Every structure is written in C-alpha cells, then in structure tokens.
Length: 456
Image 1 (cartoon, helix red, strand yellow):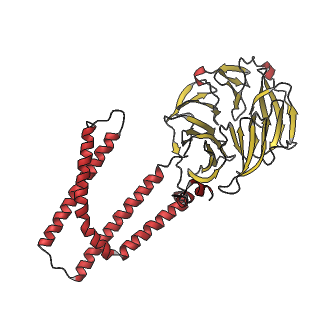
Image 2 (cartoon, rainbow, N blue to C red):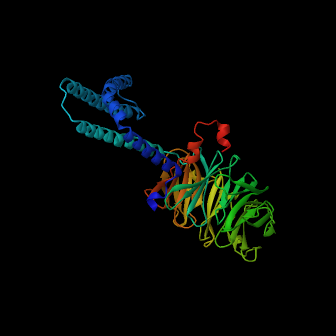
C-alpha cells in the first residue's frame, strides 16, 4: 500500500486521460497513420531551424555562463534538436525513396504496418506526457509561500505546516505525502502553533491573540474561539495545554481556550514558559528568574512546585523564549539578539551559548540536541557535551522548525520547502523533501478568475 499512498484524485484524472487518449488514437489509427506520414516533413525543417537558433544562442553566450547553469541547458537542448533533425531528415529521405520505388504490399500488410506505426506512436506520446506530468508533480514546492510554522501531531504520525499566505497543510509522515489542506485568513506573523490529540483543533498564537480553528471539514476551517493577552502556549498533555498570561498561568482544554480548567496567579510578571517533563511548567519572569509549577491532569489543578530553582545562579538575561528537552533536565533560555543559556536542572548550573546562535527560533530534539538556525543553516548543540556540529544547509532562509514528538527527528521550513530528518545528530542523515501535491480542486479552478476560484 505504501507505493499507492501518495496517489491523489489528480493523479487518477491524468492516468484516465492518458488511457482515453491512447484508446482514441487506436480507434482513429487510420487518421493517425496518415498524420504520421507527414511528421518527418514537419519535424526535419523545424528541428533544423531550432538547432540553428540554439547554436546562435550559445554563440551569443560565448559558450559560457558564469554563475549559471543556463549554458548546460542550451547544450542539452541543442544536442536533442540535432538528433531530432537528423532523425527527421533520415525518415523523410526514406519516404521519398519509398515513393520513387514503391513496394507492393497486400491490404493486410499495409494495415499491419500502419498498426505498428500507430502503436509505437501511442507508446511514445503516452510516455512523454506521463514523464512530463511526473516531472511537474515531482518539482512542486511544499508550499506556494514561505513556511512560517511547523508542528508534529501528538503521535508523531502527522506534520502540520502553515505558510504566510494562511495555507495550512497536513503531511503523512509514514509515506511523506500531503494528506490535508485548509485555507486560513492570513494573520501575519504566527508565533506558536499547536494541534490537539485528535488532529481536529488548531491553535494559532499571533502577537498576543490566540485563536482556535476546527479542522473537521477538509478545506473549510471553522473559527471556534479567540482570547487575547496571551504570552505563550505549550502542550502539557495530548488534550490540554498551558496558557501563560502576564499575571497568571492557566490550564485549558483544546476545546475551550476561553474558560480555564485551572488558574494560578503569579507574583512576578511572566515572559515565557516551557513544559519540562510530565506536567511540570517552568515560567520565566521579568525579574530574570525561573519559577516551577506542577499541572495535575486528573485534578485539573496548578500548584507551585518545590523545585530548588532558587539554587540556580542568577540569570544575566531576560527569559523571553524558553524550550525544554523531553526528559525535563535541560531548559534553554534566550533573550533574542542578546544572549542564550542552557540551564541544567539536575546539576543546577548554567552554560552560555555563543552569541552567533542567539535567536527567537530554536527547538530541542528527542535526544537532547539543541537545534540552532542561522539564517540558511542549522547547527546542533549537544546539551550534555556542549559540542556544536552542522546539521542542515540548503540555502534559502529557515523560517520554521519543529521536533518530532515521539522519535528523534525534526522538520525544517526552508523558504517554500519542507525537509524532514530522522536523525538530529548527524549532518548526512536521511532526509525527506515534502513535495506539494497537485490537488483536483486546483485543476478544476484552473483558468478561472481569482474571485470564482475563491468561491469553490
């Protein structure tokens, strides 16, 4: 089944169209046979003229194109044009010789010869069209706009990506194909994105505005609720998340982002939060301190935890962004553009990270590898050893990053493309590029006005 997992309705339409074309050509093989007789007459002079134009183009480029592969394309096209021109002239000469010295053939032999020519033409035409479609399909970008947010589902089987045009896509991580698509209103910069356990509710945090969207209907997201004055959101369970306000920490169900299941006021003004282990939430404050809280799933309660965080050396930065590793031992604290430190909650010590990696966007993989983007490249910082190694570099700009919720893997949004890695420790790890599929809806709306396409 894996070989057919990525098939779409558009693929089926193209396949049926090619099959119909082959059937029509065969039933009209007498007409096709007549047209094939004129093919050398057309192909020979046209391909000769094309070869001449490509040769002149190469001359104008001095058969060189510094910094560009354009001349390679010209040379390949020139070779193809010369080959087709020679084949056309040879076929034309053979036809002329056949007219001058006609060979006596029975009607049955003529039909068999025509059937052979038409059958060969059908195979060539279908293969060329199918190859062109496969090439087009295989080079579709993951999105048509830059990817700004990525998040894995709770079971790690799906990846959700949001671009700057408001298009949300769902990707099947088992086979690496697009399995869902929704169009949301573009709200500019989205700081955080979460999905619930059932993959039916999406949370988007833009600025301090949190919105919930229902994903039950494919292509038609439903606005569920919204709330303001939100600093951070973090998943604390498959069906619950913590919501941080400046003066309080709240526990919410994905189904109700307005009314908290539990709430606790904060003594200091909060800046950020991270979930460190089972139900443990670390809050960074404007006092440059870290506070620990415990969220109880069954009792729906929040209480301050006796964590010994007061024994930590004082933070020399404002904890504006934080991430925790899966075990809850390490917390990475960043003041974007200023400083970044790793907090070891077991040894109760801090370790500064080079200022070259200080940014607002970073994640920690399942094996304790801190993923640090630098515009177009990604480095891995081992939280235990402190070693830094390159992990990823495809050019472009890294706009989104997400770590697998179950295994040691991560996804990178690089301009309009999404690359998925299964290994967060090695540069040469296996990689999957998520190819944006051709949707049937896109084919149906092709050629319509933007207004008509938007109403489908």
